[in-house]
Length: 204
Image (cartoon, rainbow, N blue to C red):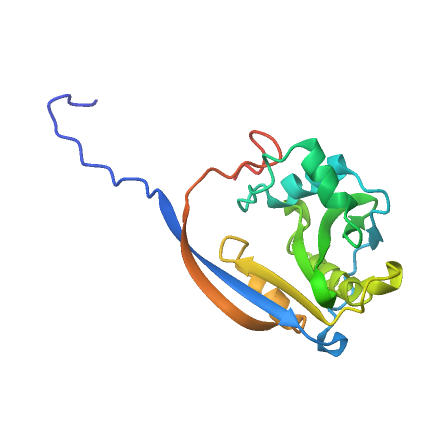
């Protein structure tokens, strides 16, 4: 039974910010890529050939909902359409037995630079050696991007950034695929709830 006269221990305040480390990595030659072993699962990696804001947003929320991907959540349909319609922008999707398991989004930049803008797996498919294979294929498609987009210069650099919120194996996965670290930054970011693809998803 609770005693109303008994003093209660003070509760520690919830931090409003957290230190986040961001690592930037690059490859400067196609020969830098160290492909991962092809997983045993029935995995197919297919380019989303029809730009679709709805599908792009689904992938973004499904993959990033539990690791605080929030920067695109407030975008309008028109803003999503602008992203997926850019010449040279590509989304490559991994399917396992016909179900979307993860994706790589390639962002074409100036002077033959391609950024891996987003990469990740839906929670149910993590830990099954699919991520390394998907990253390998996505990076290879960044290197040969110009072959599918006439007039675009040949890719001379592929880069990506990841952070300490992306999971314990993210940095190591990029390094195993042949990416080299070229910048590290630490900054404070506000603490927020992980949105998930819908309320109640990813309950632990």
